[in-house]
Length: 602
Image (tube, rainbow, N blue to C red; front, side, top):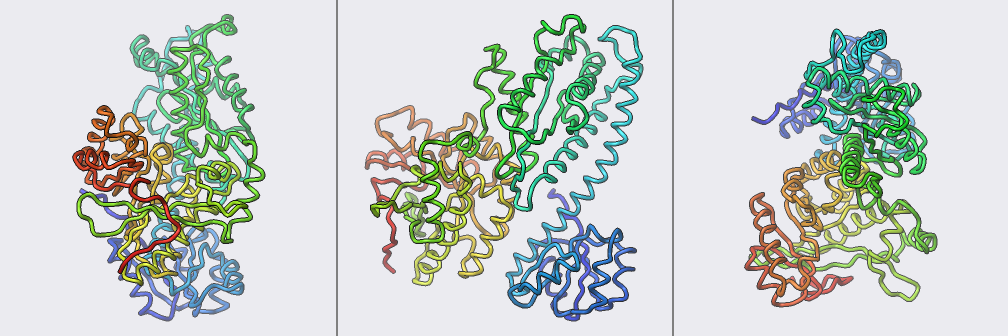
């Protein structure tokens, strides 16, 4: 049974009741249970906000009233956390913005905007409010739990029994531990979000650490539940005494803690991690700690540039902690395991010779005709009569030659320019698609989005604006996300893909087939297509092992009701193999190289 959508309670300030009723009807048509109070009485605003709980307040700009503005501005504690959205009858002007800021508005939307965009903004604003209120509740409960932890710590410090003896009231109730961990994670996510801009930009870099006891399962087996949990409880006080009180430290799991540390670079983060590893020894007496083997492991993730969702950041730190633990078990120094977890992170680790000149060229080309789109057909093997094209970006060099993406994308990512390229490419592709559709061509474009781009919540607004500007339907577009970026960005992508699905856009997993367990990717992401990595298309006819792997992946895609696309096709023999394997579409230079113009017959 699907979870019930929370009731959305609105306060609509307007003299146009028919407009308010249309909005409520539109929300209910999407399955959003909605209750609304419509009023044009300014004298009731303060009392309504104080006596009733609203999720969102909407103000139509034709309802201009000084008393109303004053009441909204002074709503304070009675409704100060409730989002206020102002609807304007025209494109917002500076005067509209001034008034919106004066009354404490959180959003300014043209009344002529597509209904689905307004509905999406309303639902997003309500969801964010509920999350904030839930976080406040959790923070209060967390304070109570922390107070209890402090009391338990004091009891532990007063005891003279051996280190492994449990306290009189061991903190061993699994439900209670998991509740504390849940509240700790919620507090961490709130602190991460507080350090980010509205577009999830990172003004000042910070690190998120995950610290975990080694051999957790073995400790539970050898010490028993109560002794082991008592040992896990001591990790928090040990860490707090080591790092001080300036940095956030929360329990994030049964046997692990998360720490947020401001103002770090890679070198400083590694020093902190090494300090924790070398100085935290819970199983040894103090006299032998200098020579004892470390019994906790640390993974850290540096947050800079464009931040992922808080869940993804914590998951990355936890994953790196596990990777290092595995490496340490086979190689004591753990060398090389503290590596970034995604393509964008790897590309940002350091400058490459020639980056500066190339970045200047890229920056100058944005907004000019030096960037070009090229198109490569995706041909159906199963009789689909729609014309599908992959869209790629090219850059004109000084000789008028088109540079391929591999020649400049790395520099664009490292210098923070990839978002500008992507937003330009999205708008330009939609513009071209509109022209082709008007000419009677049934096209679908596949467009790649980079990691920094899809982490920015404003990308969905940009896509909606482009769809509205050129009168394009969402189901004429498929947005592609690289397989290797998905697991590190599940929470970020879940939000974006949910929004894309609402406007009927389709989703493809690009460079699919490299992960050891591809079914995990398909279970995690509600996609429509999988685009196999080009490696499978190369020399396919003479490689039985590759054919077997490709057939298995195509079968897996069918089991998840997805269409499969093979890329990198080199010869006619490969087409026969792909058709036999049940692949739905093919793409490659053998069929047609990417071209800058679409020459189609009506």
